[in-house]
Length: 343
Image (tube, rainbow, N blue to C red):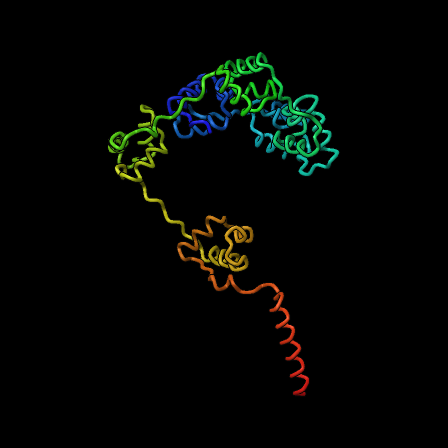
């Protein structure tokens, strides 16, 4: 498993995204768009901007999606798949995605993947590449190429070094794991730098928390936040917010806001209790019967809002089998005979 990105590397990527755009940063560093966006939610290097599209632009994107697939349209125009779906609900340019595929549909998609590549077929038919690979394991329409020469591998790895790993995957239809395996031998591009925050001593951990406490104390009284104090420390030091939070749980140097306790209505409690009883104490099954998640139902039970007795779980809900079945049948027959004799 690759080591996590260091905070220094994250900031470098986010600064590049701020100056050149998220799509350019994703292509340059070979990091998914969603990962860069998630990092920025924590580090806040750039202000996220939601692009606005005119009616004509939306129509053009939807027409492109109707011909080439939503994923291809999202990549070409920089719009999200969710936005394309939302616009299409209003304008109805193309129909809903096919959920079930017949054998003939799968064969058609696999033949396209064989002739033009998996990613091209995924875009054209609006399916996931993993689905195509899974279908091919059963139907075996094409054979993945595995016999690359060393020159070809060097060419692909060089492209990954210059344009990013993700771009190389799309250009040469090679998986990420394959590129990593080749690069371990040929070493064309640098591997991800291992994080150093796990190597800090106890004294260093406490020193980081003391810096966070200083930042916390310097904030206005009505705006103090441990999260913002942690962010301030990570901006100047090679340490993550998760690590600071974990260390603070142990040493308790930076005060945390008390979370408001969830208050459930009696109707919600009754609904969860009925679902738990009907599911014989199984949280997942109870969640399907109610509007709550398994975590919520478990939390309600932990706080003793609802309960399910283990004795109830042992109640027989199926007819007896074997010796018990014979005994039950004999008892029923004897009961009928006694009732008839008493008449």
